[in-house]
Image (cartoon, rainbow, N blue to C red; front, side, top):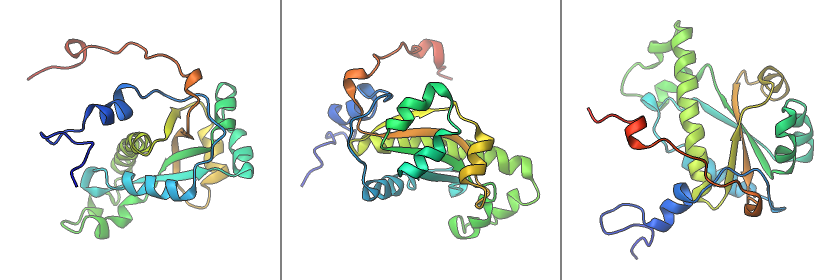
Length: 203
């Protein structure tokens, strides 16, 4: 059976592009509709397939969805982000593992990639932050592809967040992403974007 979301040229059709990019918006208000753990597992399985440098996959994700977890989370969230975080079915704490390179013998067996980072904390930190941020972008696009809405944000006390949720793992938080089914009646309109000539160079 042909894939109805693909055109003959192999590109996504307009409906799929609309859902993931053109009509999608950052969600700030939510329907009272849960997101199942099975959906979160499917979401991660898609995120894990996105490319990272030397397959480092340093991103780690804490899916906060219980009342107890939310109560703890909100103590580290800024006042402007409180309501949309409180009402979101799930809030993802996007983090990275500073020791991600310990997994590279298994994840990237083609070379001794672990040696690139062992003893070079600055390189490891930069690479972990960069690639985990890339994975956060995959998470937003994967969520939209599964029919969810996403609301990425900063505005939290990262030291407190790490203490509350990450003390045992040693992971480091970078951002929060609220997930659920957005209340589109309260979605903001599309803000301006830079044009190609302003933001790109053909070299």
